[in-house]
Image (cartoon, rainbow, N blue to C red; front, top):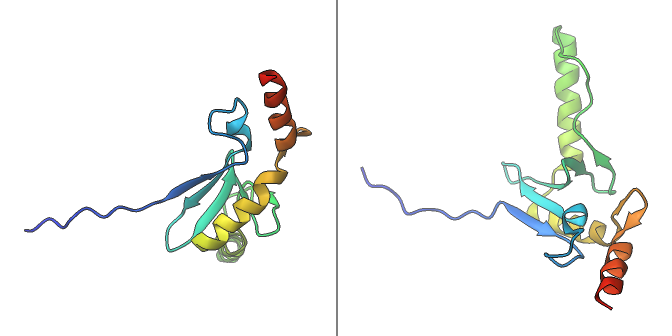
Length: 122
């Protein structure tokens, strides 16, 4: 058996308006991550974004489906959710680039984080 040459795959990007070593960088760094089958997700601390920038923690449903009808409805809801929260690589990176400058955490914004660091350096 011949072992093929290794294949290098880029599967994750970080997108942020803050420098890598900024103390708040983790809070404001989006992750664009490959999820298989040519589809990429844009995430922030586990939540996924749709094309409009809305966050979601996953497909709807709070109980395990039992009947055939419940299973079909659950599968349809999951497929719909994935269709709205998965992108090709270019679209995912573009979405992350649009969202990054506008991220906020409990009213604390990217601009606030940058200003705070600038004031600390002064």
